[in-house]
Structures are given as structure tokens and as C-alpha cells.
Amino acid sequence: MPTALKISSLCKVYPNDFYALKGVDLEVKVGDFFALLGSNGAGKTTIIGIICGLLKKTSGTIKVMDLDQDNNISAVKSLIGLMPQEFNFNLFEPIEEILINQAGYHGIGRDEAKKNAEMLLKKMELWDKRGDIAKTLSGGMKRRLMLARALIHQPKILILDEPTAGVDVEIRRSMWVFLQELNRQGMSIILTTHYLEEAE
Image (cartoon, rainbow, N blue to C red; front, side):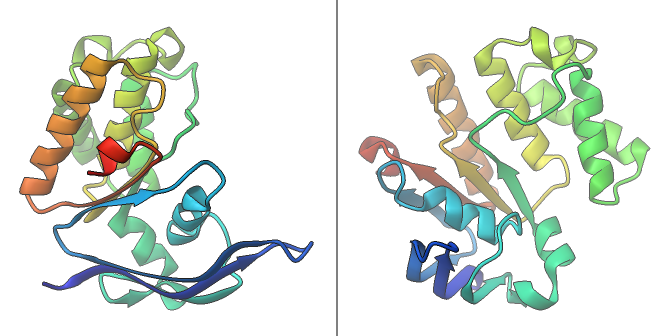
């Protein structure tokens, strides 16, 4: 199988000589459903931040779909959809516009973005809320909106940082069903968790 993500000798050192990451090697094949398991503070979010170009690495190499991140950062970003752990969208923006604007960051025209947004909001059972501002959504709905936003530009790799944090059992179960379906369709999925049962 082709490689979706390859990390070699990745290090992240902060100015106080604290090693957040030291010599990390990782390979994820296309179509894998891969879990990064570790306790809080183990460096999972740091790895994700570096893969997505949100944090600078100290040393090492990262290849995404055989593209070297250092030389192809824009292309690499377009291949990845990120669902961070913390809500980081505009709470006072209608949720459909959140998705359309996110698509625009990836060069997708408004008409195509609207089609993608409609499809995703229906899948997430949020279509009836499309005109509502994000602040009015429940925690579980916000989590689903974050997932829709990560998928709006149709990435090849979906990265989720603690995707079920703070959601109830029913929402967690429905999210797993949706992610498994995406994976069956060929999406490479990487998630972080500190729950062993989720990693399994």
C-alpha cells in the first residue's frame, strides 16, 4: 500500500531545552485507521500540530502522500483535514458560513463549497441548524460541526485530536460509525486518544 504519512527522526525542542518530541518515527499507509495512544502531555497534539504546519519542528522529515512538507507546505495542508480538540471557530457565525469560509481557505469556489457544506451538514444531522450561529449549538453538535469543517475541502487524510472528548456515549458511537464509513471509502484517518478502548 502507498504511504499516506511518513515521519522520520522528528524532534521538537523548546527554548528551555525541553524535548516535547525526540526521534519520532511513524508510518501510516493509505487507507489506515491509525490511533496515537498516550497520556495527556505525551506529545500527541504536538505531533499533529507539526504535521498540519501549525508548529515548527526542530528537526526531522515529514512526507504526506509522498510530498516533502518542507517544500510543499500549501499542497500538504490541502491534503489534510484537521479536527482539533478545542472549538476554534467563530461562535457568532452561522454554521453553514463557517464551512463555506473554511472551503474558501483551500481555494474552493462558493458554489462548490455550498454543495459540500449541504452534504456534510445533512450527514451530521445539522442541516436544520444551518442558519444558526455556532454559539447556540450543544457540545455534541459543535463537535460534529468541527468534523464537517475538517472534511469540507475533501482531504485525503483526516486527523482528529481527541475527537470524542466531552461528548456523550450516543454521540461517540455515531461518530465512530461515521468515521468507519469514511475509512471504508478509502480515507486515511489518524486520531489521538488516551482511551485504550478507542485505540483498539
